[in-house]
Structures are given as structure tokens and as C-alpha cells.
Image 1: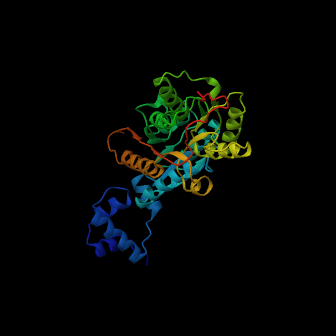
Image 2: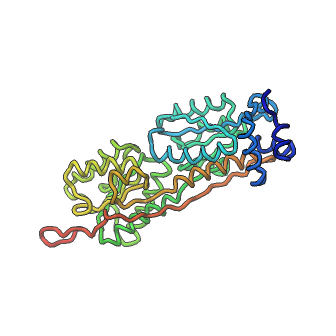
Length: 345
């Protein structure tokens, strides 16, 4: 005969109310959590999810809608998020919308039809219309990485301080003596793109430099996008002496473009990339990088959605803003002297 919650109660010495609270995603004392989880292993206890969902009107499933599952930054966030949610007995369904707003809306509706308890979304549609059906149904929503101004106060979010992250990178290049700095951004009108552009503009204007549109290139958040953008930028008659690439995949693509063009880093060009992931250690081990706290982002998303699910009377939405770190490598160097003795400026 399959073990029941009564059996767990007898082994742990805890009341059924405490055990039920644990399995329904509530917060219990740490010592009680350990007792319950040890008893579950001992008895090989499997909760009756169908019966529980009928009783609690919860599926204990969180839907996650992302732009690209192949993106290493996104998958690292999902891993941290899922680890925490799994410990709280929530499953995760991930839907990849291929950065297509139409697919994104379809993914949200698909997850709602699967009775998910909450939604976590790295939005492609900057208008937020794809989330209206979830919000109308009272499903809590947490945005990750990108804010949607039209939904301010109506959803929760976890983002980094993108403006400050960009300012750090540009200040590093300015301190090395560079005055002609190129910028590779993501797609126009995205929250992250606009914020990272603002940080670039802030830093240059603070030292009296008027930024040139010729030194700014937009691309999609892919290796090929980074490759093409860097190639176009460096083929200009007067290319920059330093470069900031604002995304992980684009950084890899950009570095490959420089290699194929015979441009040496940092001898010919100083470069700062984005996101310190394990893959970089094997490909470009000496690159100076802006490091986003992927693990913390994932955990904060999970904590926010759990907090919203435990709100009894109303949803108290908030935005968590995390800081980045600049990890110095050897890819930043003072600009070369031109043959005529004039420093690039």
C-alpha cells in the first residue's frame, strides 16, 4: 500500500497541517523541512498531484516564456530558478518563442491552458499585450532581464542595473586612454538595449565626448549578429580603438569577426564583452567582461513568484535590481599611436 501523509506525520512527529503546508508550497521551519524530506525519501512517498490540485486549485507548475533556449545566459538563469522551485515542489514548463511576439503570445496562452500557477517571462513584446490574459486571470507574472514600462506596478521583475553596467565598461576604456569607443547593442527598443545605450552615452558625455552614431551598431542577440555588427563597424575608414559588446553571444561572434579580420586584441583594439560564463574560459580566457549574476537572477525570480503565490489578499509587486561586476582580463590596453604620432582620439 502506498504511503500517505499520515505515515509521514507518524515518522516525523509533525502535524498534518505542517506537512500539508510544505507540499502546498508554504514556508515551514528549516528543521521541519529536513524531517519531512528525509521521511519522504525513507518511505518513497509520492504526492497525489491530481487530488492536491483539485483541493488547492493549484497545479504547482510555473510557466516560463523565453526568447531563445539556445542562449547560454538564459539557460543558466533557468537552471538556478528551477533548482529553487523544485525544492519548493513546483515543476517548470519552459516555452521558447524564438524572439517572435506572435509565438510569445501563443506560448502564454498555451501555458494558461495548462493551468500554470504563475508566469516568468523574458519579454520579446515590449508592449506587454501578450501578458494581458494572464493578468486578467489573476496569474502572477514576474519579468526577468527586461522591464515593460506599460506594466509598471502590475507585475514583478528581476533586472540588473543595465545603465551602470554599461557605464562601468566605458569608464574602464576611458581610464585606459580611449576616446573613440564603439558599441555593439541588441535589437532597438528593447529595455536592455536602451539602458546599455544610455550608460554608454552618459560616460562619454561626462568627459566631453560627443558620441557618433557611426560608432554604434545594433544586432540581434546572436553570434552571427555580433559577427556582422563588429565586421561592419571595424571596416569603417576611421574605426574605433576600443569596443564594448553588450551580450554574451554577440561577444563570441564579435571576437570571431576580429580574428578573421586579423585584428589583434588588445594590440590593435581593446575589447570588453558581456557575461562571464564558463564557456569564455575555454574560448577567450583573457577577455575583460561585465559579469551578470545569473544564479542570483534565477533565484530572485523564483523567490518573487513564490512570494506572489503566497499573497492571500492582493499581489504586492516589486522590482529587484541587481548589480554587475567588471572582471578584468588583458583585453584592455592604451590606444596605439598612429604612424604620424597622433594618438587615436
